[in-house]
Image 1 (cartoon, rainbow, N blue to C red):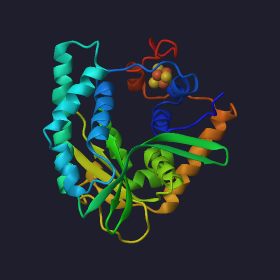
Image 2: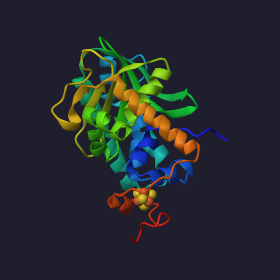
Image 3: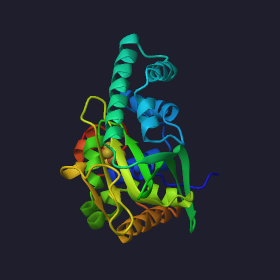
Image 4: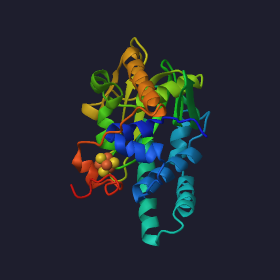
Length: 287
Ligand code: SF4
């Protein structure tokens, strides 16, 4: 039997509702798919095929603005949406073209020179009996900064969730403030690429795109993206101790789940229950 593992997305589910985490990640009940999940999956595939390790800034911009991207989108949409009607495939193509254009705009706004080190790399950290797994969308080497982990956020809820990347929330709430930064940083470090910075590219279909992130190293480094305006758009620095504390919290969750000690409380947020596919089995459907 495979050892129980945590993932950044699983821990996001844990923060939203521990009971839903139990259904999805412990019982492994089938994942439901939606058009937005499909768009997200196809977007990652298109980026994977378009941006390659070794590319520098100009090459990345040339790749994402190349006419060949349309062909890649067509092929990936056909592959992922065989059973969908033509209008849904057309809508998905339109979403993806728009999202890739926004990636190009974010690349142009980046600060400094960089080179892509890896794309869609399997991440894994195995420490003190705790196994964390996930996919590292991209790691760049940025002049004067070091390794920058980039995570593409493409779901409709990205804007709301990305607001939680802010330093104060991680410092005040630990992992509940954001699990992805500490877990991806730990996996990158375990792969021999300790990151100096973590950045989200937020490109939700049909909504404004932006980049936001945190410097993970102490000291004053150049920012890899513009410093931003406010709230979710900011780039700022966080202490390594705060990141480590959130990681230790994830270790505690892993131990409690793996040892059968966790009670998986239902969330108090009834709005989440209204959208939850487990509402009936969870006995929240009629409450
Ligand atoms: S119905 Fe509500 S409490 Fe139950 S799993 Fe879903 S979100 Fe959690």
